[in-house]
Amino acid sequence: MAGDVLSLRAHGMAITGPLSEYPDAISGAGGQITTCNDGALPGMVCALDGAAFGALIGKMNGGAAFLIGDSSSFVAGASGRLYLAVNDFLGTYDDNLGGFTVLFEGL
Image (tube, helix red, strand yellow):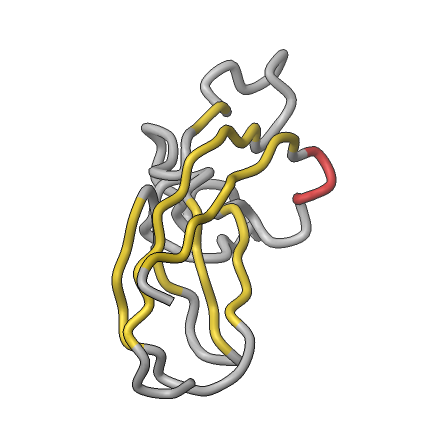
């Protein structure tokens, strides 16, 4: 609910592209060395610009995406669902593999 403090921890592995083309495309929930940047490839827009590729990100009910990474605590700005995703270029999730296990603490 809006105003609730949510604390999350995440672990696992994500692959954000074909390793034959992008050998560094493996990450934990904290993301890869490369930062997702709208200017990296012309016409490509990241789910969360400025955060690491492969990082765990969240979004609540149409609000702005935010970084979760390996762990995060935040105040829910709205009531409703929390959506989780891997930070990657929008429209390129079809080549992703892996996943994260997310633990909600204090609920």
